[in-house]
Length: 308
Image 1 (cartoon, rainbow, N blue to C red):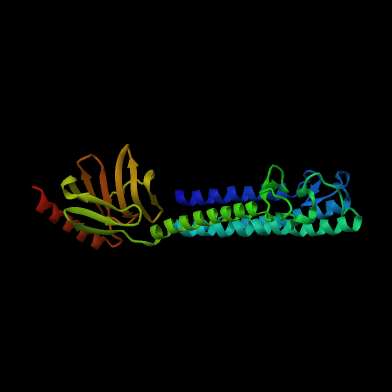
Image 2 (image 1 turned 45 degrees about the vertical axis):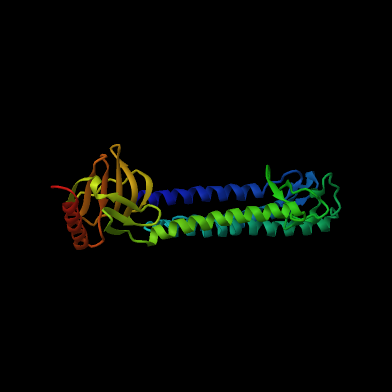
C-alpha cells in the first residue's frame, strides 16, 4: 500500500478508537445521572438499570464491529484523497449515530420509563439543568427559563448548549456553521486537486503548468539544462504538494534540494529541467508520446531564448 493508504487506514483506526471511548463514556453514571436521567445514587447498580446498560453496550458494540469492518474502505480510494475524506465524514457521523447516539436514546427512554414507574419523577435538583424535563433524549438541554448559554452535559467533563436561550441557540448555530464551512472548504480544496489534470504550456517566455493550488510558472531564462529521463523523482517528502501511488504534484524535497513535480507515477519518460538556483522541475504526460512532444517544444523554445 502507498503512504497515503496507510495514512487513511491510520485515521480509521484512530476514529474507531474514539468511537469506542465515546460509547463507553456515554454509558457511565455521572452525578447521579445514567443515560441522561437523574436517579437516586444508590439505585444506579439495580438489576433493572444494569440490564438497560447491558443492552446499550450490546447494541453499541455490534455497531462498532460493523465500523471496524468498514474502516479500511478508504484505502480503495487511494488515488482520490477527496473521496477518502468524504467517506470519513459520512462514516464518522453515521457510526457516531449508530454506535453511540441511537443506543443512548433508546437507553434514555427505558430509564425515563423505569423512573416514572418507580415514583422518582420529582427528584429535587439544585440547578435548573438537573431537571429531566428539559433534556430532549437526555442529550439536548432546552430550558427557556434558564438564561445560561451553556450547562454541564450528561457526559463527564462535557458542556452543552442551552437551546432554550437565545445565546445558547446562537452558539449552537455558530458551531454547526463553522464545522459545515470547514468540511465544505476541505472538500472544495481537495476535489479540484483529484479531478484536474496539469496543463503544460509555453507562454510569455515561461514554462507554465496550470493546476489548482499547486500550479507554477518558470521563466525559460532560469532553466540551466533539460533532459528526458526514465528515472522517476523521489516524492516521499512534500512541502507544498500532494501525491498518491498514481501521481505527484507540487513542491517536494529530495536530498535537501527543492523539486517542482507534476508527474504520473510509473509512466516514463519524464522531462527533467535543472534550474539555475539548484532546484529541479519534473513533468510528464500520461501518454509517453505526448511527453516527448512537450520535451521537443521545450527544447525548441530554449533554443530561441538562450544560446546552446
